[in-house]
Image 1 (tube, rainbow over the protein chains, first blue to last red):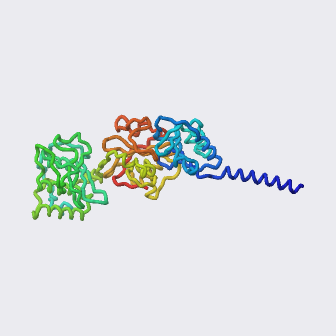
Image 2: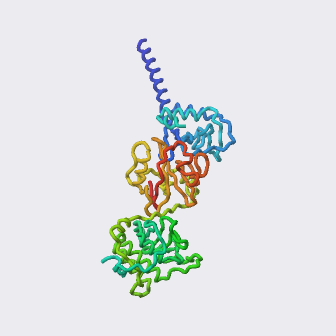
Length: 136
Length: 327
């Protein structure tokens, strides 16, 4: 009885650990903080949980008619790439000033009503790019 | 043997026979011997006396512009550049060319003055070369002598030369190898950079130095001296200097400017032939406007005072040699 209880506890711990590993496992999704002119922009790869969260935030966005701003010197938003084919997203997504631009057959802009940019700015701070983000 | 002897010019100090028509600042005239292909052409500054003598030689003559030359290998003539035009006679341009072969389709500009004859040109060239004997290699002078002799079609002697005084030590010091500064800014051509195969692979440094490496070039990388630490004026500027960039103008250059986002990044601008400035912020499109979308026109708006976003430190203007490469 005691043995089977210990086995059960071990199994639960193992499953939890599997689950945590899956959440922290990096995916192919890449974020580029587009801010530099001379140096290469900072980039990072999203973990599984971060990717999942971001993909949810990118769903059901209302379209926006205004043209997407390119930006000049300094912060120009984020570039997301490395999506799975099954996600039906373009190869690259730009996020800047509460607008999300997806390049399908032609570029389409969407309103960032779910706070994708805010979430990415938070990630940038977490990864040591606070000085860049703080200067915005 | 002195160069002026090689060129058949009398070393005897003679009485100044030509009246002094113009009063010049001694630093106003720079001569460049247009002869090399890979090395920088030798340049020197004329003394006040010689500058005056040159002006007397070319006064009331139609002079060829700097670009009126055939781009052949070897001797292409001498260029004369005044560093300021405020003391030049009205009928003398602030830069002109003496000697060399004209382009086949060259048409001399309309002028009430006649052009220098072949003899007058050769004489002026020979005399000017004698003023640069401390700069120009003797073998090069000998080669030019042969070239001039050939162009004279068998004439074995040079025409009589005006008085030539041996330079005093003071004069020689003032002739210290000052090299001509030629600004050759090019036309604004954003179409070259703003295409998918080029735009994301080239940055502000590529654009400013006008060299598409497709490597997102970094100062100092091509010379093996990349900058270290956080970007600042001194380390980024020094790394660019290793690549060939200069704080002083020497030879043929384009105007560039360096600015810094303190501790974070650097940015470069390049001036174009129309006078305004262009730049390429990172992977974005090349443009000639600042962060306020106002043209950096080079007069009221410059890299120093335009809206640069977080690039708040202006390091200064610099010179990028024509043909400079980056990686």
